[in-house]
Length: 219
Image (cartoon, rainbow, N blue to C red; front, side, top):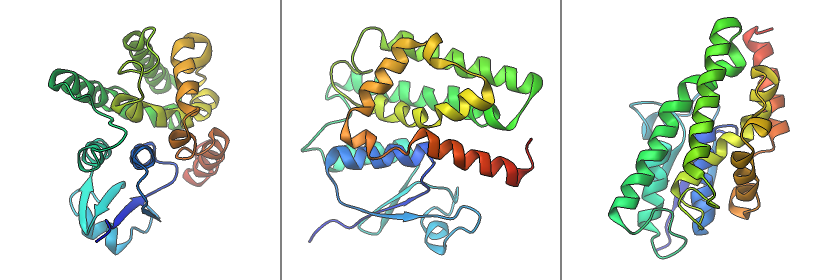
């Protein structure tokens, strides 16, 4: 019996992109069900009754919520191809640590970059750039965060690159000039088909946010 894989998703979601990349890396066929987050489907509410959020990976009828957990699940279930987490327990723990830190450092500030002004925006800019510079230090001269192979931390971080035009225009952030090694890493990741086909164009995300800001009454 073939695996039945469904992803409850919303195309601009950086967290949904993580799961898309992991599935693409493994070559797993799946059904992508786009959610209207203003009118959540009964399936989403049933499959993620606690948080009621996307993404939700549904494997043979069983739901897995939270993007990093879903990526780990994909790596463990389809462990015969394109490993994302290292085989060494210590290195695997380190990869999980850095991926979790990305969410703790970036999650709270990224929305403020396009929804706030004044002191709030300045604080968000500092928090975001501090996080990116910190990641750049951890990357060093490596091709990817785990070394010479694309892996778990790369999957966790690269989706935010789709939002960089939004951050540049509304947050007045120039990551390219301040963090050239990070941008070089992002462009390297984008050369991978599993990444480029899973991430929307920056322009598309920007147009979406322009429209959303209008609907939210943000000038």
